[in-house]
Length: 104
Length: 490
Image: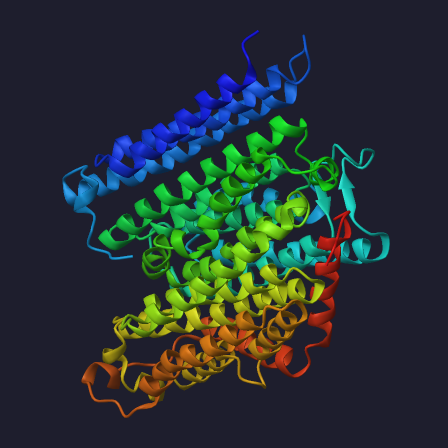
């Protein structure tokens, strides 16, 4: 079997990709995809750790976590897409740099 | 299934869209709000019976036959947090009955509020980190929708999107940290994690997991480098929602950080206590100093919320029972004070239609009750003696001297002084003689909006003059938090 460390390194790399996407992309839809990538990085971790819990045995708890977490991610993106549609109607663009009227 | 109060609230939440669909057809549009208020009141009664049970029998585990595999765990801290969620939630709901009356989407508004409150109560009742995460997402998703509730205004959309991206990235980060904890131990219940890490020597992954969890849950708590969503979201949400966001939605974040860091990460306590101390110092200074520069009333209150989060972190940085009592007291009192302040700001904006401070000169003379309640809440936020803010800030201040963190206590006093500058500016603006004709025409808000304001003001005074029951309650909550830390060294 492949060593556990590689999977964890892959998940951390995926997390970095998601954060890079959130930091640099300007399209609102791409930002939502960035969030999805972040959640999937965590999901991969859960699946891996469930598979490596004991030799020859997969922990069902980790897999059930992933099922629920995928559902939650879907709900978050649904709300996010609603807001994107509303923003598109207001601004006529998906460019997030146009949404800079408020200063945090 | 999830203990009586939470079950009731979830059932009411599921029923509320039906009620909201029926009531406009019966020409009783206010009935949806009345239903939501009754739901919260009934849940409050159920919570009281649960309180009696927990205070006599100790913490409740569900399913009851297994201690380690519990997915729900209700102890004194859970009851303490849930009571304030329901209390301020009820006040804000009663206030909303008039406030959102003219909107066409009132049914969904009350459903979202009930969802948010049931999510928060679920968070504090959770016994393992994944149950907690599911309820966390329930709360988060409904707050995203509530912040952008006025969807015809660009500010709401913009603030909602910014809030959503930051907060969802925070949740994903927290989930990543949770997955690392699961990988290290194979369990996620707080007892199991505390038992696995309590005595073992810490390895590098534990530090990484602690970092991920602090950052992830810290976004909703608005610890300073992660606070940028907060002023936009609070100032563009409807006023009752701002009151709830500021008063109680920061609570789950504080709760999760306290719960995980005082059980799971107790073995690396020496490392994270100074970090939280520094973060709390930065948080209160940045919050107070930026609040000084604002002219928009709701943005000013939003920045002062950041400063108050800094005060709450002081207690966590101290880490003793007194310090944690101070944190929970400050959270409870902040919910009352800031809830009242945001509702009053909402009442003024509702009548005046303007939110810039210079346009509000003299409005307090036209709306005397609102102005009096507003002043009481602002004096309490400064920390003046007859009001409840004084009690919690005093507790936090004394706790810092127990553990050689006196510099943090002095910073707390200094920040109270800085904050009085902008709070008193609001009071002065309200009390001046009106100059504009717009202000001359303003009337007092309807009675149904004044009732929650007066109730909050009375409880601010009562808990200030007679704080013993509240302090005892917070003390029990802090003891419940510390009771299962096996190696409590300080």
